[in-house]
Length: 387
Image (cartoon, rainbow, N blue to C red):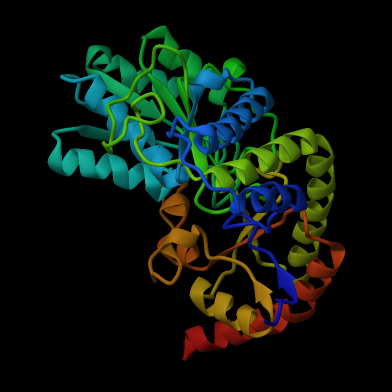
């Protein structure tokens, strides 16, 4: 299989860390169900519980607060739907207008079929929710707010939210606060206890772990109604046989990513700033989206005037450069980014954007390769847009 000349889509998924591969591989040949009481089952249960302790220790949580899921999407669904149902008859659900579709679509389903009143919180031109905005939204009818969900860091433009301040506003009113921290783990310092959040989403494949393994951290006393039912695993909140090999790899990735977070942050920030500077010099009218400073260290998100994002993506892909037009879940859909629209961008600019994201395998060579082909790609995309 041919490898890309430059892989610049770590926010979609990042290559597995050696530590995660080793931990997962060690468990693949082991027989046993973690719910079984015999010796083989107990051995697998031990693997799962050690993984739970590892994740809790790395993220400032108690082991009992770690609920394993199949990934970030399931965790978001469980948090938003489950907390809404647990708080009935309250109807209001507050989300930022720049959430991942896993959160937005969960809330939209509640509105369509469960009688929820979903309110999308405004963001500023950098994609940030201000605590006063949340406070004002709650004040319109605080007794009817079922839950609040605001992501830790945006998956498209990389802007970091003031999660601790937002959680404090929710806490002042006794309202459960959930944050999707999928993009933040391993890139920013994340402590569940210090954040003040009641629920926190994370997943393995964004931090060098396997796909198909994630978790929802749930503070003590916070019990969402289950979205799926069966054997009563995971505090009777998330039924289903646990994938012990994937969980072992997931825990190893969390441990390594958190341990190396500071070093990773500094290295990626340097690479990101180099990428931004060189893209700006190669395409002088390019627009950097998101907060120029308080953003994820590996994120560089641009709008290219006169271009369609999908055209840019395919032209770069043909030259071995792999990036994204935004959220991988909506890739290939020719519509403006909802994140950029919420930030006040015009529809044309919101369609003509690209996201370059760096990770643990990124190097200066990746940036060199991008800059080598980018000016010609942009010129060709602009000609195509005029034809």
